[in-house]
Picture 1 (cartoon, rainbow, N blue to C red):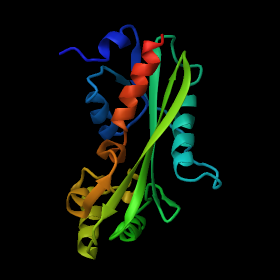
Picture 2: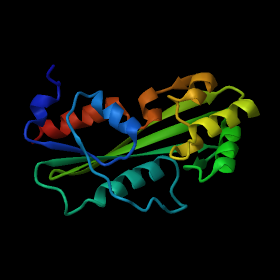
Picture 3: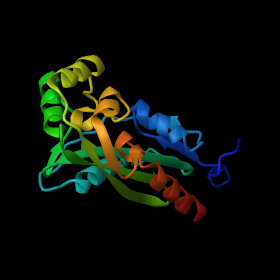
Length: 200
C-alpha cells in the first residue's frame, strides 16, 4: 500500500531523532519509511519557561543539535513531551521514590500533557505543539508501586505511559489526542509534513 505522503516525500530521507520505541511505532502509523538517528542532548532549560514553552524549546534544541550534519534531502523530526500539574513540570523520574511521588501527585486529578515537534530541513526549522488534558482516578499505593516496580517508567515524563498498565486502569478520560500523550501528535505531524513538502 502506497502512503498518502509517499508521493510528496519522493527523494526525501525522513530521520527520526528519538530512541523512544513509542515514537518509532507512532511514526510508522503515518506509513512512512524512516531511519533512526540519535544524539545525546542536554535537556536543561530556563526556569522562566513554562509548559508548552519547555516542550517547544527542547524539541528545537534536539533538532539544532544536528545543524551542519544534514544532507540537502534530509528531513529531521524531533519531539519532546512535558507533563504539567499545578504549573509544575514533571520530568522523567530519576528513581523509584521520585516516580512514586509523581504518580501520587497525579492520582485523582487532571493534568496537561504537551508534546512539541520540530521539523528541520533545508526549508528551515518548524516547531509546533499539541496539548491533551488527562484525568486520573484515585490510584492506590499498591497500584502505583506495582506499576513502578513492574514497568520502571524512568524514561517517561510524569513517570507513566498512557499505553501501559497504569494508563489502562487509571486514566478515566482525556480531552485531546491520545497520541499526543504517547509522544507524537500524529494529526499535526501529518498536516505539517504535507504543508512543508508540498511547498518544495
